[in-house]
Length: 158
Image 1 (spheres, rainbow, N blue to C red):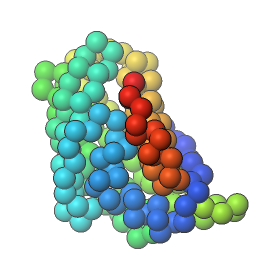
Image 2: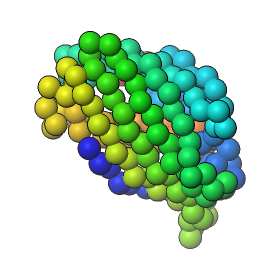
Image 3: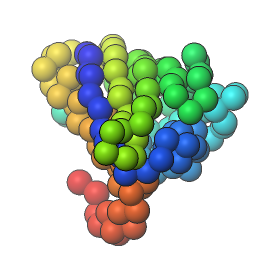
Image 4: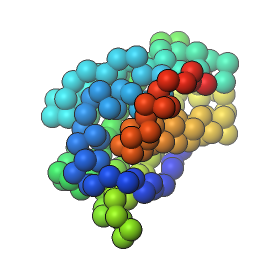
């Protein structure tokens, strides 16, 4: 599964970069994330609960940042194991640039693979789920930076 998209965020590039490297911000933005510990330098450990079609799983795994160009870009890679449900692994190339109208343009290219029971659900369902997860993450991330996370945080998540 591959996804290529970008978002215009009404915040300066250094603020967006700091948030992309903040474990608390990432934890709040990752759908289903129950725990995220670590640092950008050492890598992160995460626990994420998700339901993909009829399969519910708790994924535990690690996330690392490579090819880091401070304030501009990095590659984020991770792998999670969900027991009998299978595994998910993938990564994203994230690039920041100044937006002509002010703020920051965040570009991302995501690639993900799954195996086990989840893979048996079919590529259309898995691709749809992965796209939804990426969209939710970047929507939450944008809301956090633009100061709308307080309103969104008080509502029950779907």
